[in-house]
Length: 178
Image 1 (spheres, rainbow, N blue to C red):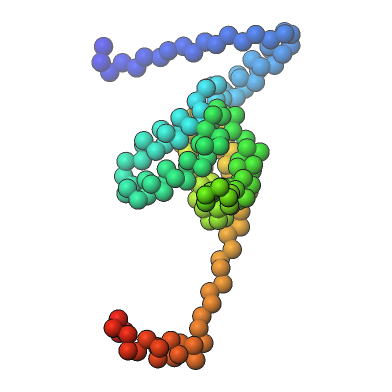
Image 2: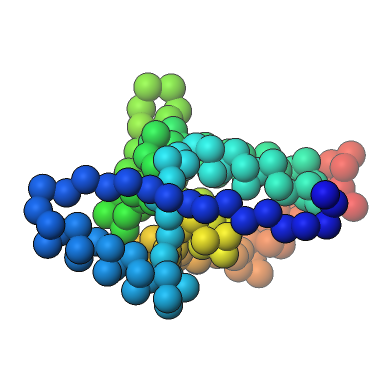
C-alpha cells in the first residue's frame, strides 16, 4: 500500500578460517553500527561515482561542467578502475605526483600541470567522495588526508615609466591607438 515504509533485512554471509576471526569481525560490525560508523561494502568504482556526481550537477553552466569533466577525467583515467572504498591517501598522493610531473601531454612530450589545476582536481574529487560519506557509502574522505600542492603566485613584471612612454610613443600613430 502507499505510504508504508518497507524495511528490507540486509543479511550477509562471511567465511573465516578461524572462529576467533569471525567473532572479531562480528564485534567490529556491531560496534560500528552502534556508533553509526558502519559502512556496508560496495563495489562502486570511482568512475561510476564521478559519473553520478556529474549527473547530479544540474545547475551549473556549460563552461563549469566542461571544467569539472576535464578535471575529473584526470582522475578517472588513472584511478577510475578502483572501487571507491579502496581509494587511499597513497593513491591520491601518487596521482598528485603524476599530475605535477606528467599530467598533460603536448604532442609526445609529457609535461606537468600547474599546482592550481591539481588543487582544482583534488577539490572536485573531495566533493565526489564527500557526497558518498554523507550518504553512508564511504566511511571517510581520503582526499582530506592528501597534501595539496602549494600554488605559487607568479611575480608580475611591470614596465618602468620610461618603457611605458617608449611604447606609447611607438604606437601613437598606429590606426588602433587610443
